[in-house]
Image 1 (cartoon, helix red, strand yellow):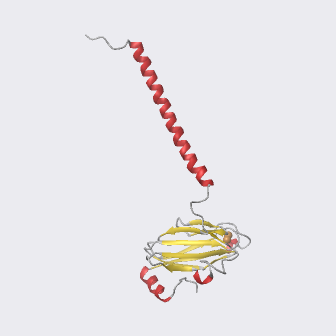
Image 2: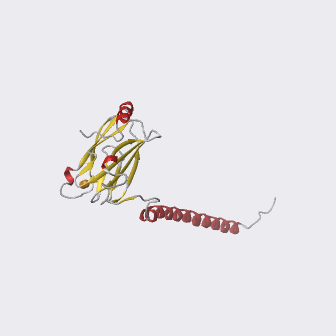
Image 3: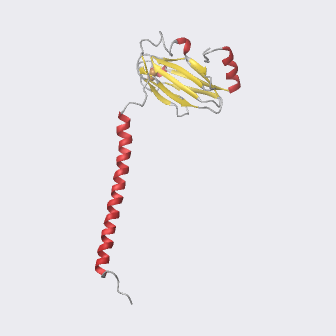
Length: 188
Ligand code: CUA
């Protein structure tokens, strides 16, 4: 019969120290995860976005991508659609936005005066329109239909009445419209 390498009390001491090491490691892991969550949530949220696009709210109507003739839905060379819109007290321009089904759509919008909300009912599209900055939201709709776009940031006495409409139409119909007009909307 062979002798054990260590006396029994030494074995217990080694087990206890191994347990302590594992306890320290697991607490350290939890601390690291908490730090990572805190860093992502607090530090990154207080930093500006990687690329901030600006637009002078006093000059939107004079030059640049938000001049009136450039608002609405534009078919891009790659087949995607870019929608440019402005929020102002107390309406959106265009008041009715038209987009096709089954197509990548990017909203680019800004405010001409105060902070407005840009939200499409029943979707995850939800952002703020901040004067001086361009808000960009990528999205895609698979089914045709009509949705409301209420302003959801209090912007003054007319806030309650500030809303627009979004019409998702069949892709073929949209492409046909796009052959006749450079910028599309459903404003009647
Ligand atoms: Cu615009 Cu509320």
